[in-house]
Structure formats: structure tokens, C-alpha cells
Length: 385
Image (cartoon, rainbow, N blue to C red):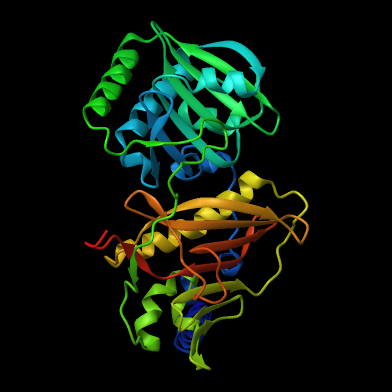
């Protein structure tokens, strides 16, 4: 009696194995992903990103020796000595510093804040104090108990201390904190001394939270497609596969000169103008609870994945800088706009690239990336400049 039962079990196992292998042959390697991995890209929680530098480093940094002339840096902040030193100073402040006075932002207070040697870190959005604190230190509530948001941070040494001015221009207020740390203080003074030996990058700017350099912020330079010219459908494929959990299952077709890659959940197009465009085919699961921070992290996730794919293929690429954002028109929708950085300055993409106004544009609804567009170009300063 036992032998027929064993035979039946073996036959059933073989039948199931055949069915699975047939499915793999016809539908691709679906074992590598689940239905949930097929859904549009959604931001992870804020806690998952608290040590990620993406949001914190989406700033421009400026260094001044006298509060009037500044060296302004966009992109690659983690590679800048001024950013590294500022990060150590901010961490020391959060872990050991003390809260000082608060005041109103006006012409007199700004002149005093920006006076003398200082490092300025400025965001094109309102940075949550709690998120900023989590990135740099382990002292809960140290900043957020005093203020909730800021967009400009001025770090300035006086005779004995290092002062930190967190400015919220929308609220018209600033909040000062101070740090007594001998090693950080001398390191900061030494950094300014080195800058004084080479002031070629210093330019006069208008003092204040709008922080507008007297020279043009944008740089006119040359650009080229980093993956080549006269591309075929197969040439573009490696640069769009990362959008798909199972690239083997995506369809490829050329429609009116536009290379199109698609599955049941997303469609990616590559235009003759060197623009790659991703669109989610399913609506966002929720929208009303989407905050700026969580939506921005979703945009950064997509941008980081794109740049990581380019880097993995040893393809030249520029840094990007968040130059603006907007709300709507849908509930819970945030739109983010990035420009490329070359030679430490922003690069205008011009008016001849069709559907884009900036190098990268991302639309997020309900923490879900619904559209992502990027100009696939590499910009560099030519010998003529």
C-alpha cells in the first residue's frame, strides 16, 4: 500500500516541477521578485533614511573670510573640506553644545550674523530640525525643542566659541547655539587660514538669506551624451533596465523614433533629444499624508538608483543640485527640479530639449514616484573658458 502512495507523491512533485519550469520559460524569471516589487517606487520610512546623506547634502555651501566675498560650492559636498569640518562641528554642537538666544531676521541682525569668517549651508527647502539632528547627533529634541525648520545655517567662530545661527526666513526668525570645543575651534580657524592663502574663488555676494552671488550662478559649458550618439534600441537598454524588477519580461519597441520599454506596471521612454522618461502605470496608493520630506526622499531614491546604474557602467555623469520644488496639482503631489553641476557651478540645459525645463524633474504622489525625467547628458568646462 505504501509503494503506490510514494509513486503518487513523486509524480505530483514532478508535475509541479514541470509546471514551474514551463512558467519560467514562458514568463521569465519571476522567482526573483514578488507582486509587491512590481509596484511603483515608494519611499522608505524616514527612519530608514536618517543616516542617508542625500537630503542633508542637497545644499549649497559658501565660505567667507570677511562676510562680503564668498566661495560658493554646489554638489559633491561630502568631498569638500569645508563640509567635512562643518559636519564635525555640527555633530559636536548637537552632542555637547548649548542653546543661546533667538531673534528676528532683519537687516541689522543679518549683517551681524554674516559678519567675519563663516561657513554658510543653505537649502532650497525648509529642512526639518529633527531630521537634521538625527543625521548628525544623538541628542533627541536638542534643535526641535527650539525650532521646527530652517533653510540657512551660518557657522561662525568668535574669540572663544563657535556660533551656529539657524535661520528660518519664512518665519522671520533665527536661533543661535554655541559650542566650546577647542579642537574643532582650532580646526575651523585653520581652515579659514588656508582659505586666506588662496582667495581666487572668492566673489562678492549680497549678504542675507536669499544669498545671491553677484556673478551668474549658472555656467555656459559644453555637453555630450555620455553613452554615445546614434544609439540603437539595444544600446539604451542597459541604462533603463534598473527601472524594471524583471528586465527580461519588459517589451521593447520603437514608436516615432522614441525607444519604449514597458511592462504591466511602468513605461520608460528614451527620446531622440536624449531624455529618459519613467512613468508609473498604477496610481499612488495614498496621497493625503505625503509630506515634503518623505516625498523628497522618494525622489532621491529614484535619482540615486539612476546615478548608481550610470556609475556601475563607468559612465561619465555630473552631480545634481535641487534648485526648486512645487506642490500639486493633485493632492499629496510634490514636484522636484534638479540641475547639473559642473566646475562647482550650475549648468543651464537651454530651451532646445523639449519637455524638460531642468536636468532632472521628478513627480511624487503619495510618496510614490509617478514620473521621472532626466536629460542624459554630461557637461564639462571646455578649454576656452
